[in-house]
Amino acid sequence: MRTLAMIRRVFREMLRDKRTLALMFIAPLFILSLVYFLFQGNTTTTASLATRNVDSSMVTAIKNKHIKIHDVNSDKSVKTIIREHDYAGMLSQNGDKLTLTLANTDQSKSAVIKQSLQAAQAKLKGQAAATTIKTQAQALQKMQAALGAATHTPVNATTNVGNLKAKLGSTSYTTKTHYLYGSKDSTFFNTLLPIMMGFVVFFFVFLISGIALLRERTTGTLYRLLATPVKRGEIISGYLCGYGTFAFIQTLLIVLFTMYVFKIQILGSIWLVLLINVLLAMVALTLGLLISTFASSEFQMIQFIPIVAIPQIFFAGIIPISSLPGWLQPVSYIMPLYYGASSMSAVVQKGVGFMDVLPNLSILLLFAAVFLVLNLLTMRKYRQV
Amino acid sequence: MTEVIKVTNLQQGYGKRIILNDINLNINSGDILGLIGPSGAGKTTLVSTIMGMLKPKQGTVTVLGTPMPNRKLLGKIGYMAQTDALYSVLTARENLTFFGEMQGMSKAELQKQIPYATGIVNLNDDLDKYVKDYSGGMKRRLSLAIALLADPELLILDEPTVGIDPELRQQIWKELHRLADEGKTILLTTHVMEDAEQSSYLMMIRGGRAIAQGTPDDLISQYHVNSVEEVFLQAGRDQDAHTSND
Ligand SMILES: Nc1ncnc2c1ncn2[C@@H]1O[C@H](COP(=O)(O)OP(=O)(O)O)[C@@H](O)[C@H]1O
Ligand SMILES: [Mg+2]
Image (cartoon, rainbow over all chains, first blue to last red; front, side, top):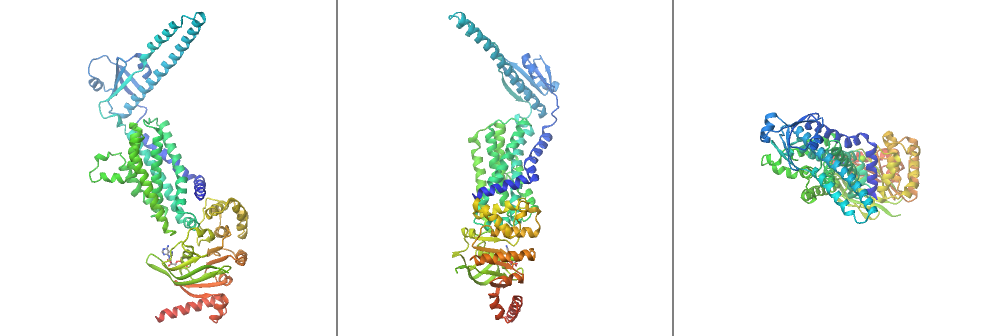
């Protein structure tokens, strides 16, 4: 009941504060877009792609204004051909096996080629499906006609369908991708994105919830609240649910934005991505509330950002942890963002499942629980029962 | 007449610093206790201790028969803080509703009590204005309305009359006397003599000690003076003389 009233109040305050709403929902998208344009490179690049023995239907499907196709017949090794002509990549076919070799010196070109190839395969599959449906419809009509004429002919009609299908079957290719330099993870943006997503959620939730509780402390409303029979736990859970809802909407917005605007493929489950971000938001929320205890003004709260929020990003995997100096590596284990961001990377880029990130998620939950208890304890400063 | 507030041998402070010493107090239902003293004397500290926001360092505090601190008992206390603690982006009505819900009031009770409480402080016409558009005096009145809202047995008002014009002050005092006649108990702090004169019991605090306490008439005759103000001044001089003797 009291928690509900708290949540209602948080909603009202938040919805009336247009600037904070913008900070929560627009600023993260702005930052991510900035990162996108900075690190994705020029999307108007044209990539040159060499093809050898590739079906003409496939070549036609690949063609778009960002791809320049060179058909080659030479028997030289793929590596030599790419090096000699400075191609961005080469596609060769053997039966229904496609082999894509990417030079990967310019990761944005690799991305263009990969996207075009994926699009081409999808297109061909679509066409095949359409044709199959058409032929099946025709076959069905034939069958009906045959059935109407004489009851002993349907066997023929079925065979026809089988034949037609066999002819179309060759459109499903299997693709293997090789890289001359680097690996498939090398687009810096792709590496950066899951980490940035985690960080952006963490940062804004931390800041907004922290400042909200701080304002409540400095205006005396927190003290006034505690002069009612409300439990400290009810205040904290009101905050958690209230700001948690906004954090969830923010996360949803960020995930959808990266999926539909940046066209980033999330290999793992999108629910898992949401779950990780929500847990990260919970940690940020409880930490923000806790840190606000040690600040006596909004300005002091801002001073905690370089101490609490910024260092997290260095330990979140932008620089691989293993390449950090040995004495610095353990520091990452006390950084909540490390657990959140590495889970995000694993789900977005490697497509791992719930069980694989469960240990990390449990640690995030533990962080949130510890901060929660500390919050309850620090509120004793205002009311000693 | 039942005993509402009982403070015995209270010593209170923050950290190592002692603010209040040897405070003893007995307030019965229907009393209006005026806590009077210069700023920094420890009035707010005493009020916080009586409400149970602070644990006594030494001594005991009992409110309505319950040893303090006690969270549930706060539901029976209407409190007005010294600084206005209001949500500025909410309207006055929303502030009243929110604090009422926190106090444990039902929707029906709120519906009935909001017009009553705001009527006493003349805020009926401004109920749906945002608090950020309120003047200082209006905020003070809204804080008082919040304290009155739940029709509590004990009202604790920390400097309630600051920034309130004389006409409204009279109206508020009329209501406080009516509540006291009903058997409610009121504790208020002030450094204004007019408020002190309206109280039925006075406690003067200076430098963390109770330098004089009793009904206004008793005090005036005890100190052989003509007004409460003179009692206060004389008690202060006595205290200074006493400490310089030490
Ligand atoms: N939260 C606090 N922490 C430390 N000292 C405090 C605190 N609140 C008040 N004080 C000190 O206690 C003394 C009495 O303050 P207070 O009770 O607010 O006086 P009054 O209400 O009579 O003006 C002052 O010297 C003040 O500095
Ligand atoms: Mg005070």
